[in-house]
Each structure stands twice: as structure tokens, then as C-alpha cells.
Amino acid sequence: MDERAIGVFDSGVGGLTVVKEIIEQLPNEEIIYFGDTARVPYGSKSKETVTKYSKQIIRFLLTKNIKAIIIACNTASSNSLEEVKKTFDIPIIGVVEPGAVMAYKSTKNNRIGIIGTEATIRSNSYPNAIKKYNKDIETFSLACPLFVPLAEEGWTNNDVAYLVAKKYLEPFKEKDIDTLVLGCTHYPLLKDVIQEIVGDKVSLINPAKEAAKKLKELLILKNQLRVKDNPKHRFYVSDDTTKFEQIASIALKKFIPSAQKIDIEKY
Ligand code: DGL
Image 1 (cartoon, rainbow, N blue to C red):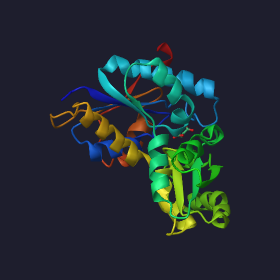
Image 2: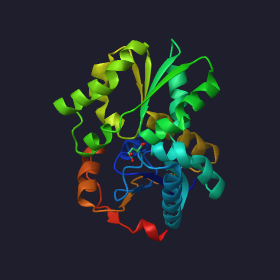
Image 3: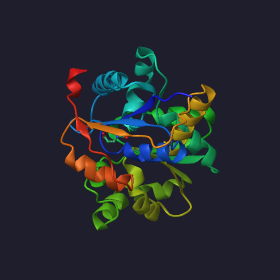
Image 4: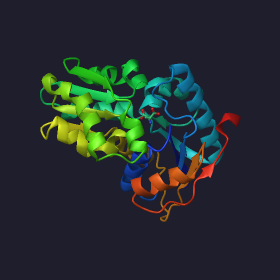
């Protein structure tokens, strides 16, 4: 057993969809969350910039007595996981590999759609990871950048969200996919409209579920599960805390202790 916390980070609020999964699968674990609300979005930034941000955040998390890190952000996982794994001596789990595992297991017709930010799609991280398991799978990738501000605004299930999703996803219908990877932390928040447009026959993949499972397996393997109950999660952001706290309370369906603003550029 190991009472230390799990560090989780994202470019903003989206990573809370990963926190939700960790809380469900590992209810005793304590979470230290960092949301880079001052520098979001990462999806339009270069690999170098995203890697620099990831390193700063990991240096910050390492000041908090943690035993493992989950990079909840697909953009950061796609663009910086390899580099940060080489740099830091702590287990680091990204969301792309877990999402790829779920997707290849889910498809029956070997046709998978992938949606994510521009930087995630440009990196080709999901097609590469999926083809490692089955090279016969065909993938169809599409960046859907407007989904992020919609989710941040809380517009996840209204007419605007529906129209935007329809415009992006309608062309997927011709591709005859049976599986769609929600390759961005924010997209699970829009899953109802996405499902409505792609239809019930398409399975939506939320990589967060498998990432939390992978974390659980790691902690069991290393005999590092936290045994005490009543964990005290802590939330940190790089910009104003008020909006983050509001969205966090909705996303996690519970009151969260107040978030703390920190100067991430110092790390
Ligand atoms: N968290 C990012 C991701 O999962 C989406 C938001 C952004 O562009 O920063 O890719």
C-alpha cells in the first residue's frame, strides 16, 4: 500500500472526465489535479510548446508527493508522452494507448473513426497505436476544434452543439465506421449529441475508462493501492478559479473543495 496521491493534468477542465473515471474505479485514491486554464487550448499549439508545458506541470506535480501521473489530455499524451517518460523517473500513463486498445477491441468491421484536436490528429498517435494491434484496421481522423469551447461553455446538449456536431460528423456516415474514438478530454461531455448524429450502431470510445483501468492494474502490480478511505482531492489551475470550480462541480456531480491558482511558469 502507498498513501501518496495520483497526479492528473490537462490543459483545462476536460481532464475532469478522467478524474471521474479514476474516482469510480479507484475510490480510495487521492488525486492532485492540475488544469492549465491560462494556456488552454493545447490543441492548436506545436509539439514543442505542448512538451514544454507538460514538463512544467510534471515538475509542479512532483512537488506534491505523488506516486504516478496520468496525462489526461489527449493532445499532451499524443505530443509529449514519449519525451516526458524519458525525462522523469515516475510512472506516467497517457490516454492514447488505452483508447487505442479499447477501439481495436471494439471494432467488428475494422473501420474506426478518430476525432480530436488539430495537434492530436496531426500527430497520428491514434492510428499508429491502433495499427500496432491490427494493421488491417482502417482509420478515419478528423479534428473538431469547436467542440472544446462548446464544452467549456457548458453548451453540450443544445441546438448549437447539435449543429456543430452535425457539420463535423455527417461525412463520417459514408465511411461506415462502427467505432468512434473520442480522442479529446472534452468530447465525452458532448457524447449525447455525437451519438445522435453518428447513430446507435457506432460505439463511442472514451479513453479515460481504459486509462483508469491501466492505472488500477499498475497500482495493484506494484502493491501501491491506497487503503485509507475518504480521500482529499486537490485541484490547481493556472488562471482564475471560479469558472473551474463551477464546471468541476457539474462534471464530477459533487461539490469540490476550492481550487488554488498557481504560477506554472515558475516550474
Ligand atoms: N485537453 C485537450 C485534449 O484532450 C483538449 C483541449 C485543448 O485543446 O487544450 O486534447
